[in-house]
Structures are given as C-alpha cells and as structure tokens.
Length: 530
Image 1 (cartoon, helix red, strand yellow):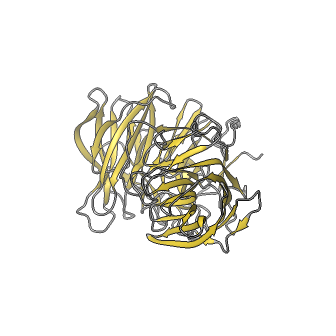
Image 2: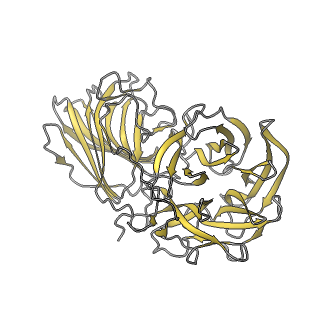
Image 3: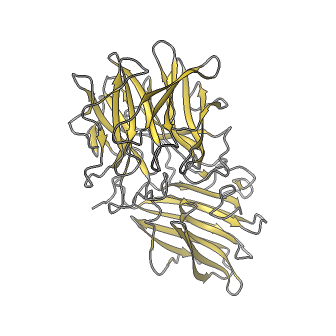
C-alpha cells in the first residue's frame, strides 16, 4: 500500500485534537462534551493507523445536569519528566453572555492510568493547555472570555499564568499574551518552542465554515507575539469544494525522524450542508520555512485529503472489531458512551441475564440528569445498525428501542411501547431543532417477546425496519430525514447510534438487548460525497 495518511484519521465525532509523542508512541485526545466517559485516547506508532486505546475521565467527574454541548471542552495532553498531564474544562453553562466553566489538571504515570484526582486551576474561561518550558516552569494558557465585548462570541485573546507543581495552583501575575487577529474568536492556544522562538498556535474564526489556524511567535514567552504575515496558516474558509471543511483547532507533533505534522479538526458535510458525523480529526504534513514560519508541505493553506506518511515502519494494531457486541463479556466495550454519567449497576447490567445487556428504564430523551442510553459514534455516511430487544411494556410511558441521537433537541427514536387498544406496538418519535413530533405508527406486534430493529443510514436519511417473526423484515413506509442530527445550528458533537430505555412512571421497567451490530455499507472512509 502506498505510504500515505488518509484523512480524516479519526472518523465520526472527534473534535479539538491534541496530539503528542512519547518516545515511539503517538497519542491524540479529543473533546467529548456531555458524552461519558470523557476524553478518549487514540494511539498510533506510524500516524497512519490508529486505535482507541482507553478513556481518561472515568472517575472523579460529574456532568449531571450540564446542558447540551457543555461539560468536557478541548482537553490538552502533555508529557514531561515521566508524567502525563491532562488539562480540561468542565463547562456548566456555555451560552451567551457568560461562561460558567472550570478548568482542572490531572496526572498519571501511564496513559492508561490511574489518573489523579482533579486539581482546580481557574474558572470563567476555557480551552486550557499546559506548556512545560526548558527552565522547568509550567504555564497554563486559556481563552480570555470577556462578557463586555459586543457580539455573541466574546473570545478576546489568550491569557497565560504560571502553574506551581509544588503548590498545585496557579501563581504570579496573569498575562494577556495575544489579542488575536482580525479573524477574531481566538481560542485553542498551544505553545511550542522551536529555534529560539515561542510559537503560539490558536484557532480563530469560530467553529464553522470560517474556522482557521493562526500562528504567532515571540522571543519571550510573555510576548509580544508577531503574527504570521501569511495568516491563516490553515483554513477551508474559501473553498466549498474541499472534502475537509471547517479546518481549525490544531496542535503540533514532531516525529523521531524529525518530520512535522499538525493535527486539526475538520468536517465533511453531507451534500455540502449537514455535518452529521460531527467534527473529525485530520493530519497535515508541515514544515518550517527559512524565515521561521510554519507552512503546509506542498504549499497553500488548505487541508489535503491525503498526505505523505512519515518515514516510520508501518504498524497495524491487531484488535477485534468493536462493530458487533453480543453482550457476552463481563464489561462494556470502551466504544460505548453514555450521557453525563457512567453506566453503573444501578441501571445497566451484563450479569442479571447472561448474554444480554439489561437496561432499566430512566427519564426521557430530553433529560439532563438520568438518561438510560448507550450509544456509539456514527463513523460512516452509509451504515446499518441492528439490535434485538426483549421488552414487556404495560404503558405508553414505557419505551425501549433504537435511537439516532445528536442531543436533547435533535434525535430520531424507533421504539417499542404500549397502546391501550393495540397492545405492544412500534412507534417513532423525533425532535428536530427543538420541535417534538410523535409519529403514531402504532404497529402491533402481538405477543411477540423479542423484536428486531434496524436502521439503515444513507447520508441524510434513515430507513427503519423491524422483524418479530423470524427474519421477515418489514420496512417502514418511507425514510426519515436526519439532516437535523448535525452540527449546523445545534452544537459541537455529532450523531450517535444506540439503544435506550425509558420508564416515565418511575418503576424502572427493564429491557434486555441481545446484540448490537454496526455495519458500514460503504467502507470508503471518505464517504461517497459526489
């Protein structure tokens, strides 16, 4: 196979990448917002092949009650003197005009943990990163969020303050080191030391189509910082024909072969409009010019679908596929995600009925505290998901089934419930940009104990089908649009596919799921966008 990196390297919802190298190992962490566990770690040895190694925020965190697209923003990973450091923001409220946001630091000797209890750093801003200087001092960088600024986005440059490892707190004066450029909305700061300069990399232009990467430099860490005269260094803003849109929020890594790469977020909108897969992670090859600026190798400032891989041995991981889960294990696979809280024995079990996943009914799909939902990222434009559920509802307030979920305002739910006249039946409900719609199909399935549910996704449409007598599948009358399960106007995540149970009577009636299958229909990770 040709020695190339195919973008995006992390498909589906994986925004705000922070990449580091430790000896011969490369690690990327990404934002998770309201999804739990927080902060997945992706591992590679050749920058071409990546595996989901672990999740970091599995303890000492509580996101219950946090609004959609809040909680974990922009985690930044670093490594120094045998210790991994992670700084992250827990956003309690992210809407105009304030940011109720709190920044924390945790450490571990191994990337797989155990991780320390969080150390509180500061509040009121977001996108922290920690720079370890050559003189032993450590510096925390943040967005400067100023509610006095006109407009809805009030990012007003970058703050920096020293962190004392001995005192476990920030010390000394607070420096404003960068005002940003005319692109505005300056966020996601990272500092790198190279050839006597401190290089400050930031994201600007917001998180949509005008997203961009800005580079500035200074001989002193506290500034003043000189902006790259050819700014922005990376953007998709001026070319709607690019596969990779919304390029921005970047971090740098240098290989052991002295080759440089930049990891950045991107988006591949379906039909040029709907970022259903969310914001993903891509890699670009970069170089330093003779006058000391960072440039994309090959010229220009637009992200490329394919780039030359580093001069490293090819390393493919031998891992079992996580696309099929028959629920025969003792623990949930790390690919599963829940909302705001862990999947604990109070509501989910692999032991109460061997070979099945038992989920006890929780609150509605609009709940911010007690949703009983397990889901995984949608990673392909064309895919099929299937499950089989054993459920015995006695009220229309009891539901279990297959869900496509972006957030509390945007989902499509194909579910089993109960109708007073027809008994056990199938229905569909959806919420589209906050507008709820109940679709009263009321398809009776009689006394059938188990019902199979399937969702076939093709770009911005989903076709549901069901079977309750053998494998005789029945299609619903027409596909349903899922264009609303996208970033545009909604938030910062991406579509998830999964299973859930509700019991709005509060009796915690359970449903048993026999399996969950995720099958790509088109294995081309770039998708068929033509």
